[in-house]
Length: 353
Image 1: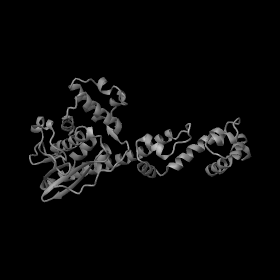
Image 2: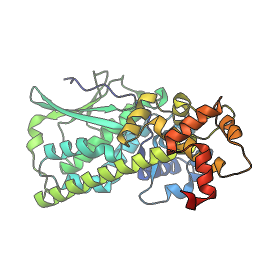
Image 3: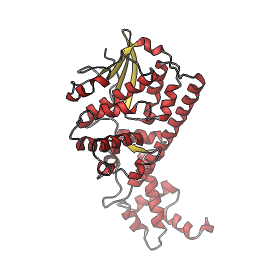
Image 4: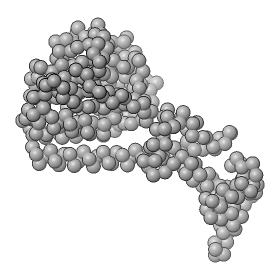
């Protein structure tokens, strides 16, 4: 019952994960005798961020906390199941309300697929029907360390099943979870808390009779459903715009002249843990490009330096990496429409312009 799901995209972006997930992980750690201070020790996760309502962690921060939890627990394998069982619909309040307002299970699943990446941009879902069964395929958009692979899919499938179970009213006997890896030893401890699970399958999927897609949700409300969908669309657009602003701010902070001059594209990408293709795509979405931003940074540096009358144009040209002052003059005129000498004179005598 495999599907032709789109292979995961290798994307080194650092999207955000709601801080509620971190709180659940810290709670699980505390129950196992690891206080918050020990869990967060050595991690780039400020305590204040964890306590801030509506805050998010980057993928890097989230993964570092997961790895810390696994390490402190001695490699306890069931943490993914445990977290998945706790998530349900409670962790994502906005999307939970949106799902509960849908008229049918199929409507809720399709809405979740459309908007889940707004809130948890790690996973991607695809719904298909085959031989009378509905198949919800779940894949990851970016590569995971081997130590987190099973954990991530354990958590994903169980949390989605748990959330759908709420929509079914707590009874869903004919759902199956399919995992694309061998049955782990820790599964035995969770067998009675999970639906039928099959291992060594072709993909990571949730399978159930397709007839359930038309099953009505008791809390469904067509007016609320439309309002929530519009709200989700606005939230997606707001986060998209915020993401554009964030990448531009982050990139500008890295375009600083060092001992070897200004960093090139590959150097910046390595610092962002991002492929050049991904960075170019994000900059294109923001309406700009790497060279445009670099030229703007260099223009601002040149203008700042030209404001110091004690520095010669030749010295400024050399500092900025131009072998010949004439090349600097041509570049500066392209940036500002004036030569360095003309711009400097204008700053001295604004009325002469």
